[in-house]
Amino acid sequence: HNPHWSYSGEEGPDHWGDLSPDYATCKTGKNQSPINLMADDAVGTTSLPGFDVHYRDTVLKVINNGHTLQANVPLGSYIKIKNQRYELLQYHFHTPSEHQLNGFNYPMELHLVHRDGRGHYLVIGILFREGKENDALQTILNHLPKKVGKQEIFNGIEFNPNVFFPESKKFFKYSGSLTTPPCTEGVYWMVFKQPIEASAEQLEKMNELMGANARPVQDLEARSLLKSWS
Ligand code: SG4
Ligand code: ZN
Image (tube, rainbow, N blue to C red; front, top):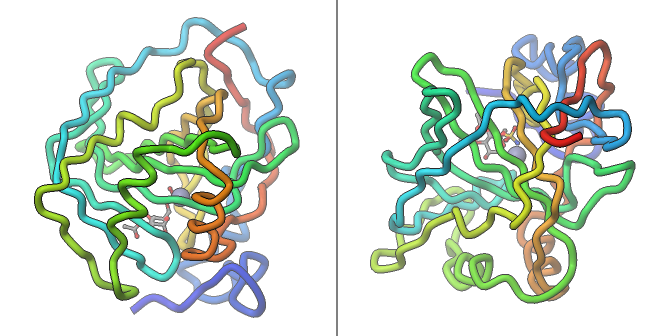
């Protein structure tokens, strides 16, 4: 059983590393996430490997696990990068955004969590800004679990999270960590530069559901931040 953690007070982000020896990396790690994505400081390279999105329409399974609102994905959806297949496990949301873009937070961030056959994580981050209503997000908002901690399956609701990808495929890439305890490193992060839109009402509703659940930005330390354009 893992020690309890939260986003404020005694069990908040400043204390995660002290709550358990299992969470020490949250304090001592030098490759932590999230970070501030400074476009001008990022190393531009057009030679980053491309990625192919192979997501399927699947039944919507939603859970509020007390830390985030999350959709669990049945096997069969994956991202391909250089012949490596990263299986989509789940996606979830943070309000406000965890990553900053040029020093600013956005009202929300989506994380699509993938894992390859060797257990390496790839997380894709997509930022939301306030704008027009987002139909896909509304589908999720229309199918919320009634209780915290219990997954609800909405049979008959076919959903494909590929609708969340922004038009521009420009992205940042860096090596980071899980943004929650145990803050495990070796996570391959890709964050899209172009935010997508959701309405003020939708963002407000998400914030109401989850509360503030963003870890503050961490130092880049010795890492390089890459961008897929120059
Ligand atoms: C959220 O708490 C998810 O519910 C966790 O998923 C996830 O942990 C954690 O965030 C960290 O992921 O993309 N923000 S993040 O770095 O995916 C994992 C579950 O607990 C291991 C399944
Ligand atoms: Zn996350």
